[in-house]
Image (cartoon, rainbow, N blue to C red; front, side, top):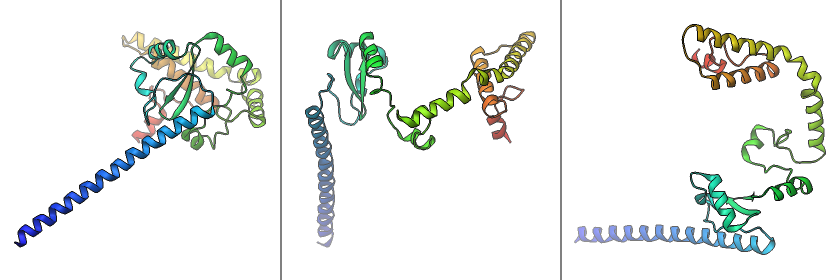
Length: 225
């Protein structure tokens, strides 16, 4: 009798836990659906938005892009909007422009409206709260930062000062290719071009080459020590 009582008690506990878990899961799903419907209703009621294909919760329209996004965007534009179309990449609203005339209109007449970049977590952490030239919002601070960059970093005088760096790295690349050809070996031109670009930028900014003389990067050399 005691064993039967324990079995019935265990079964009731399992059933209670299962029903509790199912109830919590149902409440979670209903909450997501409610928030999704409420957000869609509030968004469509407050703003006159461009046409948009139906989207799913959480992922938005990502499932409609496919393996060839440019073709998927073309097909969606033909179906929902020839000039403008609104897509949700996850929870991020993205405006898709599909005509040259509309792109020209955006760039020429509405450039200030679309000049800011959306703030995200990575630039906010790595770039000190998006205070660099590339991610800072349009305004007086951005104009001053751009002026300093153009005058102090990108001026003709400053570019000519580092002409010797480009000449030396180009000569080193040619010598490296020549030595490889003399030895009858093969060389990856793509990696070589990336290496010379990294070397030029590294020498101009840090004063040291990115690549060692043996072709390895300094990061690999430090990791091997």
